[in-house]
Amino acid sequence: MMSVEESLLDETSDERQDPSGVVVAQNVSKSFGFTKALDNVTIIGKAGAVHAITGENGAGKSTFMKILCGVEKPDTGKLFIHGQEVRFTSANDALNYGVSAVFQEFTLLPNLTIAENMYLGREPMRSGLLSRQGMIRHAQETIERIGVNVKMDWLAGRLSVSEQQLVQIARGITADAGIFFFDEPTAALNKTEVDRLETIINELRTAGKTIFYISHRLEEIFRFCDSITILKDGKHVATVSRASIDEDKLVMLMVGRPMQDLFPPYGQAAESIALDVHSLIPIQDSPEVQLQLHRGERLGLYGLEGQGQREIIRSIIGVIRPKRSHIMKISRDGNPVRLTPEDGVVSCLRMDIGYIPEDRKIEGLYLDLSVHENVALGCLKNLRLTRLAPNASKLVEDIMERMQLQAQSLRQTVGSLSGGNQQKVMLGRWFAAGVDTLLIEQPTRGVDIGAKAEIYKQLQEFAASGGAVLIVSNELTEVIGLCDRIIVVRQGRFVSEVTGRKATEEGIMEYALKDTVSGNKV
Image (cartoon, rainbow, N blue to C red; front, side, top):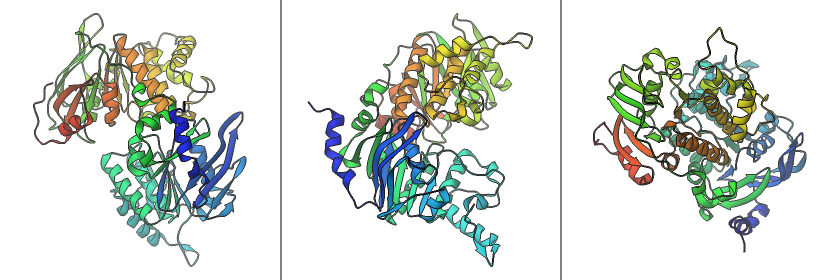
């Protein structure tokens, strides 16, 4: 009997042989040492179409992009653009052929202005001199098209994460290329910015551009893209039209298991409370917040972007100094202690509360330190200055093995890991610290589906062992699948509460969007 994967491959094998593509990567292979990042992969990009490249981390998505953008050279295989074989020697060489890329990692130079970054290497010249006014004018026009509120003379170093990403997208558009690569472009964008990106992509599609969209966000793949190529372990699995596949089948091709198997079973919250939050006012003029987080529970806060859920969780942990708060942290043995987030994060950590911020690279990890050093920091939580640091090697090794970390060794720098493995390191630090409560923002942002499943499993096991987890996530599917209980937030108020078992996307979105509220205590 033919499997789902085999049937999809059979249905779509003809598309791989289509000779009409603007971009053709034919039988491309690339190895790094003993690791084969791409193995005899053929992918075709067509004019006026958006082609998704997806798969787990390590599938070969970014390597494929780098080869087509001139950053890496293939070991074997051929590249064709408009039927002409090309051999890129650099990214500038690829740009001369009309290939523009928006990389996942930020590439702006912080000491240059926005305009200078946007035209770096392509500065407009007049009579042998830099036409600065012309550069600023053209850059401003593109920025306004993108819809980001920044000034051209700002240094890139002052931009927020989302602003940096939008400027990178604007820089790609200024190249006036015919072929575009977007590598996880929405990882740092809010809903309004994602909507604007969709408009831009549609404009490029209408203009006849060839667009490759690298992502593992299923919602965006089905929203933006016309066709989908799935890679796994460097090999081509299938190329399918968007209309011929659904999310469950796509996940099956990516990870070899149904989508519903990604989420662990719902837990049973205990009567005992881990956090009792009363009279919390996160910021000036915000509504008063009250909630209880139980042991054994994964509690989710969900709302549209900018509705206050981020401020709530950050004011509980002390990243934001709340205007007012009354929070009791109850230990495992039932002893209540007043939590004072006004004193900052340190006071919360001393009470066995761990915190994972949404931007792990800026706020959470030490990218230049090793996996071992980042995780072992958790062992120093209650260490006094006069005591020697413990030898945590065995503990770190056991935790990372349990979390199925994919790294060359524990000495590998965290900055060289994939997003999913970096997130595992963040979790591992708090497991090493022995915390009993976790507050997490965007638990799987920038994480592939396979790593998501492992992170979900770890959070479920943490809660099942008596821990408590408070989660803020913008992914509605994740909130419903992961959380035992969900609180819907609108304009800083709690407007509804539902269990994960009974939650539906339509029901939660109705509360997230409706004008009337049903009170603030849930």
